[in-house]
Amino acid sequence: MKVLNTKNELISLLENYKKEGKKIGFVPTMGALHEGHLSLVKESKKQSDITVVSIFVNPTQFNDPEDLKRYPRTLEKDLELLKPENCDVVFAPSVEEIYPEPDTRKFDFGYLETVMEGAKRPGHFNGVGQVVSRLFDIIKPHKAFFGMKDFQQIAIIRNMVHQLHYNIEIISCPIIREENGLAKSSRNMLLDEDHKKNAPHIYATLKKAKELVSQKNVSEIKQWISDEINNNPYLETEYVEIVDEMTLQVTKEWEEKGNKVVCVAVYAGKIRLIDNIVL
Image 1 (cartoon, helix red, strand yellow):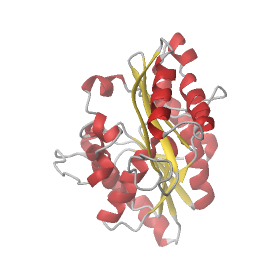
Image 2 (cartoon, helix red, strand yellow; image 1 turned 30 degrees about the vertical axis):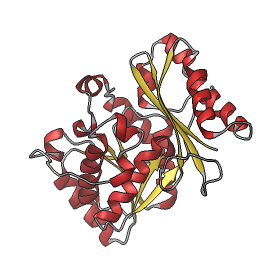
Image 3 (cartoon, one colour; image 1 turned 180 degrees about the vertical axis):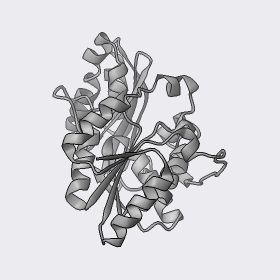
């Protein structure tokens, strides 16, 4: 496993692989790796000849400076986790390496960035667009792998790939959960004991909601989910939304075409968790 810190080293290495006709799979991460990330690496290994994992906490996608400070950074442990997965290349650049100058680009993701995470975290998806496009420009992968926990982010990335005419296939992979149902997230390690114990209530509520769809209309289900989560004293709902799986258009009636996804953001103390379930 090669660990590189500069884009010049990485570009030179990957150009050699590409000359040999090898297909490059890419897993972008912000580190603090867990089984969810490792499942993406496994999928990339299946579908690609060479797998590159980036570890970079991107400052431009944090609209809250405190959140950026809190975000866990565990590079040595991350490298230990990647070795048994036979990851080929790890790219762990500095902020200066990715942004030698401030990135002032503004993306227009249209409707996709006006709902849910876009509405609650202004500027977040612009930062995602900035960093992912920079990484795509450096690595030029054939395929890139993203987890379904960040459901809205995948729609944003697909839109950006279309806008910038990248010839990159975006692969979405299932949410990996703890045994108790909590979606694996780097933020989980920031939870204290009480919040960690109560956070699985989020997914338990989403599963129950799925069973109630035939008995309640859309707004009743949303209210029920919100109330059910807020009834737990350790959790506070930020939003509950039901959207079309492809367009993210907010669902008003069950009769509307397309698969529906319930997306939630919930505070467990100061730690913000997101989850979703396909209805």
